[in-house]
Amino acid sequence: MTALFLCSLLLALAVTPWSSTAFASPDYHEQLFLQPLPQSSLLASFNFRSNTSQQSFDNQHFRYFPRALGQILQHAHTKELHLRFTTGRWDAESWGSRPWRGSKEGGTGVELWAWIDAPGDEEAFAKWITLTQSLSGLFCASLNFVDSTRTTRPVVSFEPAGNHQGADGLHLLHGTLPGEVVCTENLTPFLKLLPCKGKAGISTLFDGHKLFDAAWQSMSVDVQPICTAEGECTVQIEQTVDMVLDIERSKRPRANPIPRPLPNDQLACDTSKPYNSEDTCYPLERITDNAWSLSEVFGRNLDGVCPLTGSDGTSEQSVCLRVPHEKQVFITQEASEIKKDDGFTRCFSLSPSQAFDISVPEQTVTTPVPIEEPILNAERTIVGHGQERGGMRIIFGNPSNTTAVDFILFESLPWFLRPYIHTLQATITGQDGIRREIPTKDLVSSTYYRPAIDRERGTQLELALSVPAASTVTLTYDFEKAILRYTEYPPDANRGFNVAPAVIRILNTPDSAPFYIRSTSLLLPLPTPDFSMPYNVIILTSTVIALAFGTVFNILVRRVVSVDEATALVAQTVKGRLLGKLIALRDRIRPKQTKVE
Figure 1: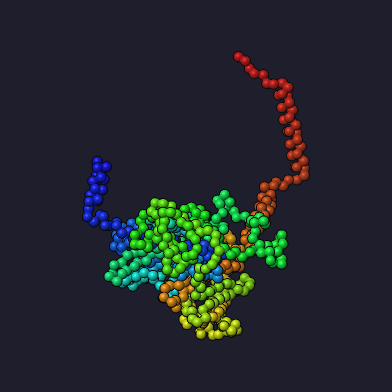
Figure 2: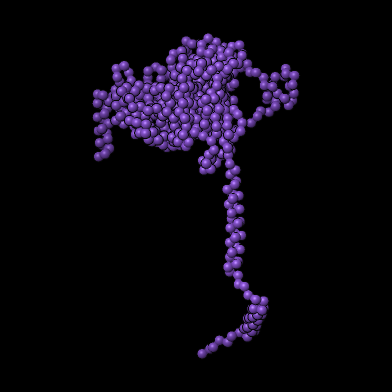
């Protein structure tokens, strides 16, 4: 009966007029972008995007949108979400500008910010705690440690990416975990949010061994509402994975997981150097690019196309490669190649059911791919010495010779790092190379400062600055280190305490698109007590108590008698022992007779 009912239901759906068009235009797209970088590196950017109508989202009718994440956002009243998992450091000097203009990149560790709909600040923070704890369980991360001391409320550093029409009670909250270690435990739930879940499409290239062996990698999840001019709103989720792989390191076989140095006879040395010898080798500059393929770099082929991708023309070209057009590139026979007009980009249309692979042989570099120069260079370090005080130094470099750079610096400092804002100083080095100190108000147009409260909240500092063309600006300020309680130190207290990276938002971009830069995280050494002292105190106290107890117990239990009584006691004791031994000997010689009746 049940089988008959199911067959009837399927037949009814097949002949229903709207059933053939309800799922005809899927709204899911994915794309992979590959670009070789200097120093034998390869940038791989994965992008997954899907939309669902606002009405379906409110009614919990999920198809492409992951149900697990959607229910968390609805329960926490979250209207817009941005989550980042990042490890490594982006080498801007060699690799140029960041992918996605830094909008999909987070600080080292885990970074999260969201817009929450709530009537007041206390209600918004309660929903924020619900959101962080739920995401902690979903992504197997330590987001439940984002408490009030790691939460800030940025004012001008972030703007909503979606359209929030008629929403007046939105609260922006931001939290970071710079010490979080990103690993495969975070990649697995990330893949489960995808419609094809790593079984088909470009997500089949994901391998934890390759992904987390990269020099730099970032995973992001963005959820935001998108509204058209006609008033139709959709909820969009976009997931990206960006990584920079070392080609030579990634091509090593699985049987050799530990990279070993090459033998001396296989090293390419510059013999023209005067110090070249059998034990000294200067690397010879390569005039050809390294040969690579998808199967070698990722350890597997790309398994077809996700069947849920759209058919708007762009989704069919799910893989793009940025190399000069005159360069030879070999692909599988079932795929087709389309070259763009820029002279460097080519995209490939994949076969739905056939595996896909790209092979780039070793070739002489004739026309290098232009690398976009970063708009601003930033460097942030801790200066000073000692266990009580220190200083922060931030260096901003403007490589442009004609245009000044306006930006906002956002600092989220822990409560045990107490900055002295009155010590904020600025020095500028111009085109002439002369360094001079200028008033801070000439560079900083506005300041927002929210002081810290011990063990309740951290310090929030937002500065609006401007760096002139071809100049370098150095900001410095002093701070004081707090002394923590004994139980507040982690097991690796001597390693130092993590300070979240600074967020830099560029304002005067050419096309008004968001552009972000994250600095590296810092390690702050704090005054650390001698953790062996409790052990010493326990041992000393136990010894004193044992001596005192033994002495008192000896005095209370011992019986004091005269010498004569002691002698008599000893004599009686000896006499009794001898008598007992004699009786035992007699019993052995003459055993007791048993009575027989």
